Length: 81
Image 1: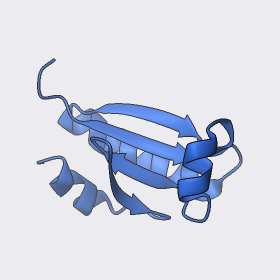
Image 2: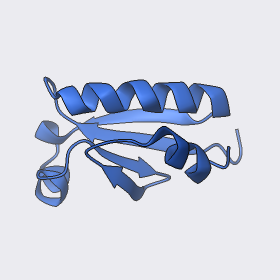
Image 3: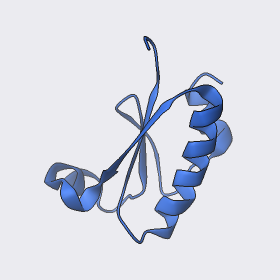
Image 4: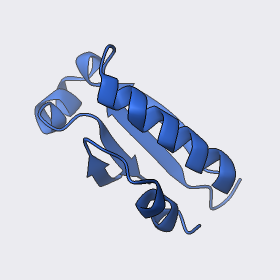
């Protein structure tokens, strides 16, 4: 679908903040029709170097949106909702 927005969650297994972020991202993305992808920071050396102190990190269309905690209203605005 042309114009579909993508939200990427960069995290790791066993991260409670990642679990919290996943819930917010899932809700907002489902409501606004955005795609969601997840990346495991432990499986990507470049992501690890860039973000290891910030996880979970959320990207919107490849650009860093936030880290640690996801604000539902702010994510919604970023996605145009």
